[in-house]
Structure formats: structure tokens, C-alpha cells
Amino acid sequence: MYLLGLGIILLAMKYLEIGPVAAWDWWWVLSPFGAAAVWWTWADWSGYTKRKAVEAENRKKQARIDKSKEALGIKPRRR
Figure 1 (tube, rainbow, N blue to C red):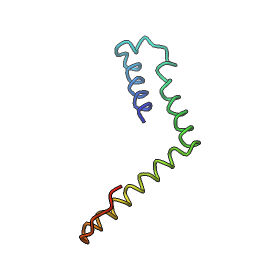
Figure 2 (figure 1 turned 135 degrees about the vertical axis):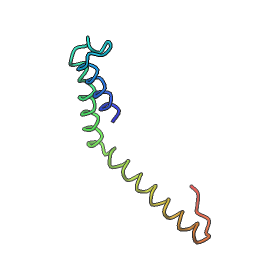
Figure 3 (figure 1 turned 45 degrees about the vertical axis):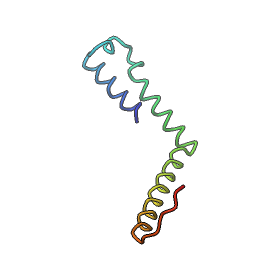
Figure 4 (figure 1 turned 90 degrees about the vertical axis):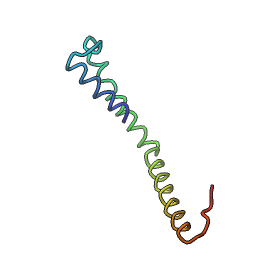
């Protein structure tokens, strides 16, 4: 996401001719978009995206369990 944001900022700066970015070649300005595409391809291929989604689900699940145990007066187990 950071690469995409950087690409949008650089693109706007180049288009509006702001600062030193106005003098850069277009391929330098557009390179963060290519890097973002490479990152997303690698993240999906390696399973990084799915692994992060599962970790987030597990954290939410554990938080719900801990909240329920506290409501029952049972001390939740800390890891």
C-alpha cells in the first residue's frame, strides 16, 4: 500500500510540475506502481497474504474468547 501511495504522490507531483519530480523521467515516477505489482504478486504466490489474514482472524477469535471468559469471571489465559 505504501508503494501505491508513493506512486500516486509522485504522479501528481510530475503532472502538476511540482518540485524536482517535474524534471524526472516518467519511468522513475511510475516505478512505484511496478514495484507494488511485484510485491502483490510475490505476497500472493508465497502465501504471505493468507498467513496474515489467518493471524488476524486468530487474534480476533482469541479476543472474543477472552472477553467471554472475563464476563463469566474466569481469568483468561495469557500467552
